[in-house]
Amino acid sequence: MSDPPTIERRTGGTGGSSQTAPRKKQKPRNRLTAFERACALLGTEKVEQLQATYKSLESKWGGTEHPQAEGMVLSLTGQGVPDAQVRAIFGVGGSKIERLKAVTKNGINTLHTRCQRSRPSHSYQMMA
Image 1 (cartoon, rainbow, N blue to C red):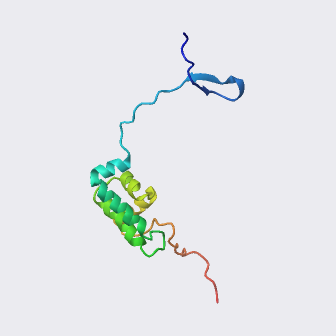
Image 2: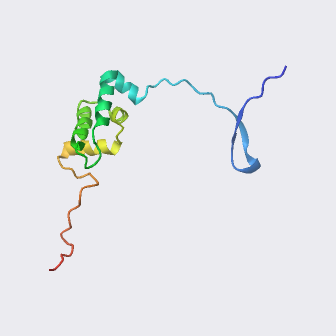
């Protein structure tokens, strides 16, 4: 009896110049995701509670609870939770975490892109 045909994937360029290569075998994944590591560090119940609280807040820019939502992110980073785990818990971007870290370090909200820039001193003044 012959062996069953193996599934092959095509590699190479377009047209008839492509070659066939055997399918790669997937290795079992040994690493935990950032969310799983956060659950191991803080506890599953605490992580779920933090997520529920953050989702219930009006955390968009200009929202009524925006500072409270940013405070939740800052409190976790202040406790030494890695950035990847904070992103996994709250679903915020890395740029927001970096901006909040810079605000706590420098004390000035200079990195926020939605702040109005001051007018340069060399710009023309409107005459009345």
